[in-house]
Image (cartoon, rainbow, N blue to C red; front, side, top):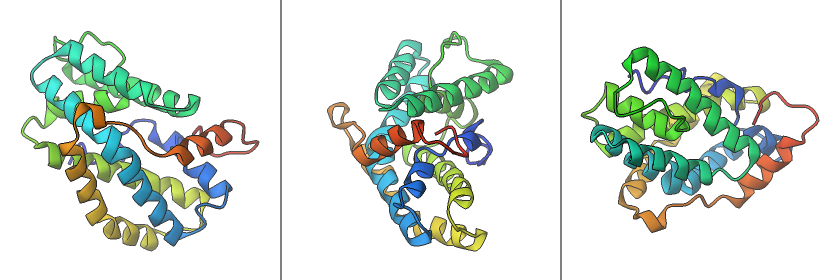
Length: 213
């Protein structure tokens, strides 16, 4: 429950992960488009990139393998395709790092900046070691969707009732994303959303914006 909190991704409220640019471009106009957009993120980014590397980071942290944990963090950073997506990964990771330090950081981790995904895996290994990869993925996806819906409420016409309906409607897609991610081999890992990278690039020069990303 601690990991599933929408407040856990410290600083996530400042980032929309491309959603604001999608709304500005007319890709996301309301609940129906938002649901489709989030489905694409789940299957084209989280399932194929974030979650498999999260699983590996979690496993590395559980076996106290600091070099592997750092390597997975670097892998995630290498896959962030724009300046602001990279910055979001770095800065949210640093915020989680401060939380980890405050909880009593494990000795195998020397405080190296890991990025958000690897830091989240380390934190999960500290507070919920017995989670299976699939359940770990469900928790991560829940927090991600909660924050995307919170961001959407500020950039598109979306009420709380509609947000809850979308969250429930995406349950089967979220489950599929965690399943797919669990079966990927190293050479199959990679983000597949060229449109997201393009919109994030546009957002970097958008004149007026609510979010940093």
